[in-house]
Amino acid sequence: MLLVLTMILGVNTAFAETTTSNTLTLKNTGATNHTFEIYQVFKGDVSTDSKTLSNIQWGNGVTNTTGIAETVAADLTTTNAQAFADSLTLGTATATSTLVPAGGSYTFSNLDAGYYLVKDVAETQNGVENGASTLYILKVVGTVTAETKLSVPTVEKKVMDANDTTGEATTWADTADHDMGDEVPFQLKGTLPTNYAQYTTYKYVFHDTLSTGLTFNADSVKVFVDGAQITTGYTVDTTNGLNITFADLKQIPTNSASKITVEYTARLNEEAVIGSPGNPNEVYLEYSNNPNNGGEGETGKTPKDNVIVFTYKTIINKVDQDKNPLEGAKFKLEKKVGDEFVGVDRLTISEDKTSFSFNGLDDGTYRLTETETPNGYNTIEPIEFIISAEHSDQTLSLGTVTGTDTKEVNPATFTSDNGTLTTDIVNKAGVTLPSTGGMGTTLLYTVGGVLFLVAIGYYLYDRKKASDKKNK
Image (cartoon, rainbow, N blue to C red; front, top):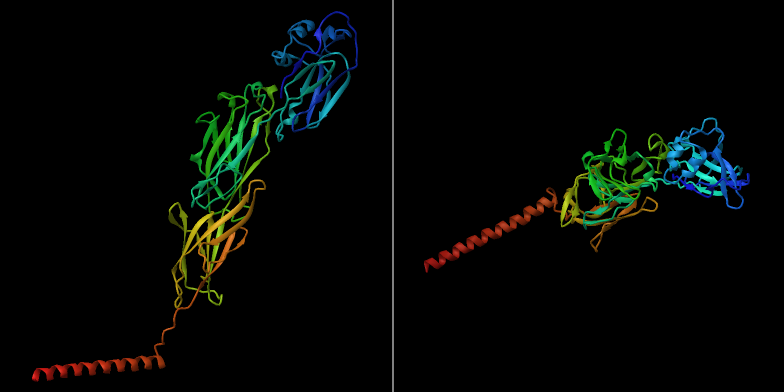
């Protein structure tokens, strides 16, 4: 979207010679198809020896109130060409129209010598992904190649990952894992087109979409321009997703090299998806894309950029030494955060009360403690285990999730399935005491009776011995 005025021919009234061997090649450097119209603004004759244009007149059907054609043409420069193009009345002028594909070119041949107005048909780019319109390009025809100089802004989205156990945080990335209840940090970063200065106004809107597993925190939005936080000049709307709108970014000191950054947090809620495909979050940028209208009206949009937040689950199955489900146990799970363990309260118990699911877990170190033990069974020692996960920024996918018991002797073994770790916790029966009836009771009574008789005999012997000693 750049106005280019290339003075290939000087203006002269000598050695005039008419030719129709002139060509104009348009190269579409943009990412979308463009339809161009060309009009002959000035016509005249080309001198074969000096390549100058003489006998300058207005093109057929083109009028202008600024003066005589030859005088106007002589005064044209790259700085005033846009104003001149805006002042033209094309009237009955006939346009030659063509569609030029993205990255392609088209050559208009057999053109009469003169100045030509090349108009990017704005409607072809309205609402188009990566769409942008070029300013009117004014060229002098000899053998000329014109590049559209199209430029569009870009946007990227990032998420912050962290390990609560180690306290380590990653840089901004495309994937992360978090606990349910975490306030997940997100970042949006947008750029501006290289021809930003050609706009008098500039609409700029971040359209951000959260999945159902993420709840936007309305008071968390921070906006930065070139690293400096701003608090005015934009609006935040959550009616349909998250929309941060700059009605006119030109009201804020910015230039084509400026970076617009938005940061906010969203809570990973109970609707979060466990494992893959995770909890996606996407953004696209809506922007002014037609400098011919000053930036008002038509807009384009960038491709969407995505990030994904993952979370995991651990299932504890209570069994006896024969792997039969065992009822009567209770557990608590704690996560190591820094130097202390903090309780995890997201517990679901199966109907038969033998399976315990802890939902929405991040990577890190955990401790499982049996708080109640089935009758007749020994209480297990607390199990400390580590959840580790791999997720790819390149493919936005979840890799391997593992659970590892930290003890070396008889460690718990975890199986992994799409972000869910499952292990069997075995309770072994305790030592069997004699029963309260039958032979057990008889044995207790017999032993008790013998002990009682021995005690009585010793007592009587001791008293007699003491009495004999006294009588002596």
